[in-house]
Length: 189
Image 1: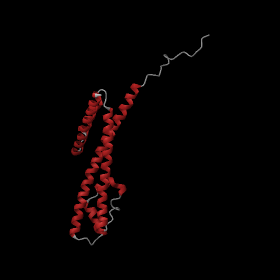
Image 2: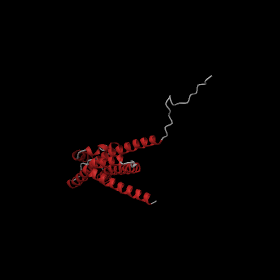
Image 3: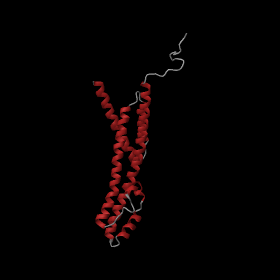
């Protein structure tokens, strides 16, 4: 009982370490710290498959959150421009091309806004510029975070699945017999 509790505590500690390393990866834009951590777990004997599964689950949840936030960043600008300035941004930034939104330029969006509502004053345009600039910067950061998280998720998932299959095969009894080991089914007369 005490040993199981220690193992769970160690697993939780390692999981927290993985979360911290993941945050470091996003901040630095580099997967190396997390990859080194995963490599240590892979070579540990026996491999910590449950930890890797938990990390995979955590990464999947984080990926979903990042994608949702990315969607919200674009949606807030679209909604604000529509409701406050009567500008439809969806023709320029359609929902189906969310992963391209951050590639739009502020000038391109402002030109689109002015074409749809030429009566906007300089104060309104200044506010829209700030809104658009913040949105594009956030969308670009989120896009990068999504790319890094996807790469890491796929890496950990591949390792986890591969190790699970390898360990399962090691546990299977060797039921295949070579032809020389087989039973003789011929009848002798």
